[in-house]
Image 1 (cartoon, one colour):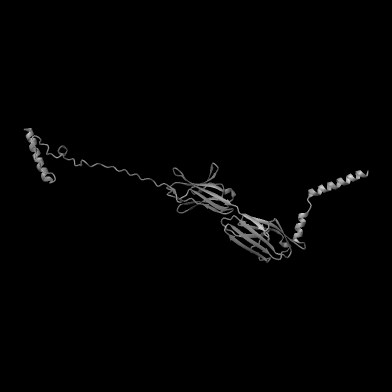
Image 2: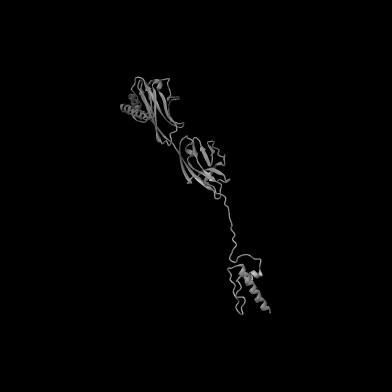
Length: 318
């Protein structure tokens, strides 16, 4: 009787499924096996009628992580070479993007040691020539004023990230070479001119990376470039790539023109020459006389020889 009831229930269930969905046709049960016509998920639906989760569906869990932006240098290089001339002011640039509250520092490397120059916008160097100038939006510039030879070497711009970012800047300080020549292109610490002649001096300055200054001539402490009180003074200067050339002319030289003459580029690059203006005596004769003067050692030797000869002659007469 129980088996008959189950079989009747199965027939009713199949009919309901047929009317609910046309995709599941009604099948007649086979004799002795009434459960073959049940759908495959019959027992799942029958035992858990309120479960509506498809068998093939899987729960997916997606995990998302947001990373904080990492600071980076705006320029594509990590090593920079900078050149400046003696006495000039120079900027060392350090452009940092996405700083995110990190700190930028400038340090001076000497061998294995690092000396702190700036931290953030504060300067910690005892040298007042160093200072930090921030330029929007991201340039942490180190300013060095009146650069000298001791400033030459490596500098590091560091960002306090993990790991730290380091930009290496190597500064080269070029010391120009100054030479004063005469009208013949000869170099000598002293020049002689005859009264009434024209003094002509040439100043040649080489190794100038960026000639931002002009050449000045001085007679002792008096500036000659714009001197109109004496008259007859002319200065002609050419600023060329990497070098400078200037000529000084002083017409109708007199004894007041005797003195020290200097040629200066900026404030620190100077060459000097001593000028003598002679009255009546030829400059060549004066230079020859000064070159032919007997040295004190030779005079002593000659005196000793003469004295020995006289002493020997006296002994022979006895």
